Image (cartoon, rainbow, N blue to C red; front, top):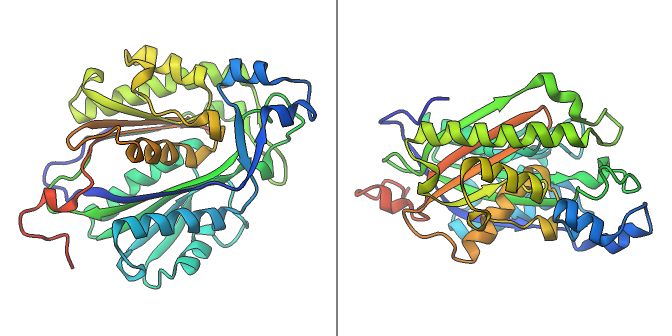
Length: 329
């Protein structure tokens, strides 16, 4: 994949927000719904609980509003809204349209992007492309309500998935911005490993997903690192898709990055698909795990099978990238 072209107008993340439904489904709850137990789930996935309930638009609106508030921007300041989701509330229109209305974004484009669990990183890269072409601010949201397509009586899938949302505001800067390199990939030949028919529930070949996912994540991350001109040793924080702790650990082993450098939230959220990366990013930022100038690696995989990675040099302040205050209207 190409690196960010020299001279392209870049962007920085200036605000973020998250949303999780109030209802929690624990491993102990699942013991009465399927042949499993808490210890078995923890050992194989790293998950203790997941959130269920809510709607894609509702959670997106909550997370999006928090991101706008943190960034200090109003509804009229957003030029585009990208909602990464594999579980829209309706077949038509895009759930992004509902979120646009609920947030009062009166003068922006809005669309859904479906790349499954890689969706938010796909959306992040697309948002940088819009900004390079002239957009000033883009709201990027990743949301999934997977309880609507998950059979919680199926031990193969029901132990994994939950609902959530994460959002970020990207703001244009005169300089190159945060994004240093990226990689997007898809292996359509493996789509049957994880899928849900329209009106159906998730079906998964667990061993095949594991085998493919570890390699996909490591390869995509390596491509993004190469594109950015940095090495794994340079990365301060890895924000991986929160699918399964064993997949995350095996992928990082291939990259030579210790698990301690990753942001992990799946024990409390389960696999939230498009929401998992922004949820893990928000927690790391809120906990002060990232300082100005640190390198962050986003990496994920999903049904499709899709993969996406991005390397950013962190700064939450758009003014740091320009001397003339061009980020101000």
